[in-house]
Amino acid sequence: MFDPRDPSFLEDPYPAFAALRAEGDVHLHEGLGLAVAVSHAASSAVLRHRGLGRIWQDAQPLERFASFNLLHRNSLLENEPPAHTRLRRLIAGAFGRGHVQRLRPMVATLAAGMVDDLAAAIAADGSADLLAHLAQPLPVAVIAELLGVPGTDGPRMVQLSNAIVKMYEYGLSEEGRDTAEEAAAEFVSYVRSVAAARASAPGSPGDDIISDLLRSELTPDELVATAVLLLMAGHEATVNVLGNGITALLTHRDQWERLLATPSLLDSCVEELIRFDAPLQLFERTATEDVTIAGYVVSRGQKIGALLGAAARDPKVFDEPDRLDIGRTPNAHLGFGLGIHYCVGAPLARVEIAAALSALTAKLPGLKLAETPRRRPEFVIRGLRELRVTA
Image (tube, rainbow, N blue to C red; front, side, top):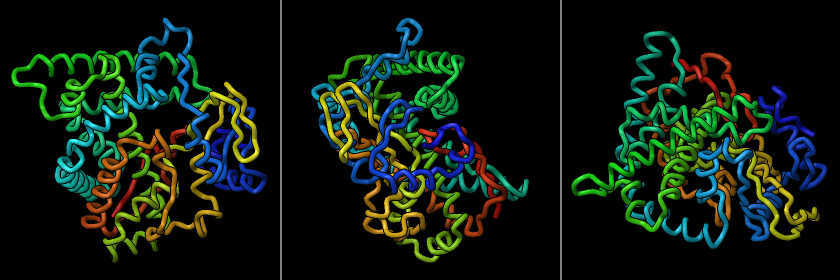
């Protein structure tokens, strides 16, 4: 069984996943303390089964993790019906008021400007970090616009998000847990102050997401949890799809050249990058009743995880799954989930990824890796520390 802390596994987990799939669809992972579904069919069943839910359990002790628990206890992601149904209706209603379409031209302009900055940095120094110049600032700027907060607050929000999401990893130190709580407390305070200012300003609320949520039936804690979830989920997914995906394109040079020659493949390229090196590798569920997945019994109260990265390389669903194919269609990846927890921000993430790729191919067609990318030492959220490129 794989060790989620082993550097060689973190560098390339897919051979280990293939070995597990060859042995069966579901396996008990003693180290993780839960069963893991490794086939596409079993992972899909985990995500869809109504007897498997996101059952939030507060981090302990309660007084130590008050803000972290507040964010998750009131989150769309950590609730099941009927609470989930109500939250998703209100949040999807806010997203449905044209925000993605409203932001599309701005996203394209932002991406183009950031690629210009990347090109200038490469010209000045010979190479530059694509994460720092494009993949990280783009989703932050978009989320800042979506929430109606100053773009200058973006870098701090990213730091807070990065600290909080480390709580989802296995074997986090006590210092890391304390840092996550401190970040959550600062984030809660920040969103509450923004919401209060928005509610009291003349002529407000406005046309941003926080204003839409203020007009909804969300409680104050639910509004805070929703705003933070949008930032964390929206930022982490886009950054890591771009980092992992551009690495894949530049490593599989024929596919980069193919995208340059055939821009009409942009949309299918986005889907393939999400599939090929999944930014979220594991999504946990808890059994609310005895459930059988691919012959494996998950007893009530026990956990099972869908290994999304393993499902994305299942040869029963994807021809030559270890081959990057930017024209792959259909592409039934599970990168944005399935069922009631399907990612509400998926349309915006697709717009951001496509805008970044479009700007890169237009302005830096000779883009290539300057050195081996540095990978983050985490398993659940898969991404890079640095991606130095040249042109």
